[in-house]
Length: 550
View 1 (cartoon, rainbow, N blue to C red):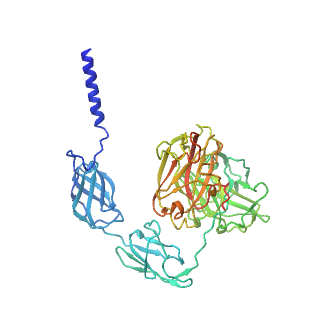
View 2: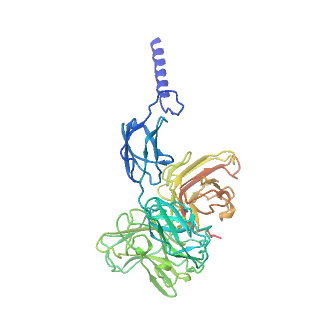
View 3: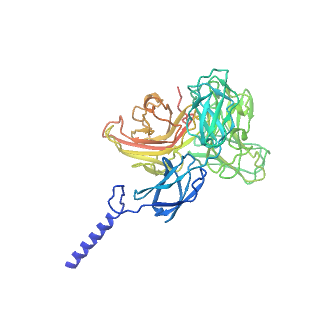
């Protein structure tokens, strides 16, 4: 008995000892003798930005951070006595500071004196819209030191890349019809001065008209075989959102006939696009690494016309399409050359043909074929395939019996009891790359799929620099609580107003963190709530075909 007691005491003692040795948090104030990582040699003290250098020293395998002032190096690999890092493109001269996992800091006696590649503008803007940002394209533009417009220093507008950089023109005195000059000073190399650039009247932005869903392939549709005589097959398959339409052939038939076409006449009423600003055909496409082809067709005024997808639209098409996976595409119908776009249209559709896929395997699948007022310009936020926060569960499709379709194979779900505004029930957050201010000049929409099951639900957006709530003014009837979706998946498309209201400090032209925080909101305390979400995506036109923007 005594031996058993001693044995139990020893087991408990060693268990406690092992437990207390786990997950130790080290701080600068720790009073034990913790290892310091030190640099003894730098392989290159005058490296070019973007290149790799090696730091030799002691305890280098413990290093967690390498920086010169506020400029952080990317750690490539490390060992006991060496660490390889990549020199950031934005950096100044100075000593290297390293911090290790024990929070011990070391500052080198050697100074890094970086070298920069010459920045060069290869295309000046054709014109400058008065008061609006202008775009420079070229090489190493993120290494520009200063830009002047008519002799006035102007600041960058949004994120700058090596090939593109936007700058503000607001605040610079310019008259419409006059010519302005731009001068750039790179960090190294010669200055460049533009020729005279015409100042023009700013183009007005517009509020996108209602998005029109032509085919989601979950609702009934009527495929019609064409005149192609070579063998092919078609079928509905699992797409990115619900079902998709797949067409394939062992050997593409080139221009020898149409495989299949699908058209929509809007229940016999046709479509009136006369009030639309920039009608685009928008869809998801996937050729799974192979090649296929599809083209739009429009029937209007008694005639049917087709047009083609070529390299002119920025996707690399050449009368054939190639993707590795699902991709969003948007094509300007007027620029495609259709004789009738902004007017009364009898039918809009798509047709599949070999095109420039001739004698090689043909494969293509499409989903979510729509007419959008302007290009979609999608930026993915959170697809809800993996967790992005506490309390939210990642659920496989079909496990909860929700109706309709969501995106991908999974979605995020959270249930609880409303506490009103007293306490947060769960949150999720994710990083979003800066939204190109030129691409998103016409506005930013945040879209997501929502399903409240058979209950009520609510959450609020957190953009890091401001909150956003769901109210009746957004077109859905939400009032700090979602209108129940009755177990169905529905879209929410909300136009953001950065710089206004609660989003006064929100700057989407720089990388930001976005989050959702679940509260009961205006749902009565004690009420069971449920929120299922999927596919958070930023666009320049709304994805919800049921929303009528006003």
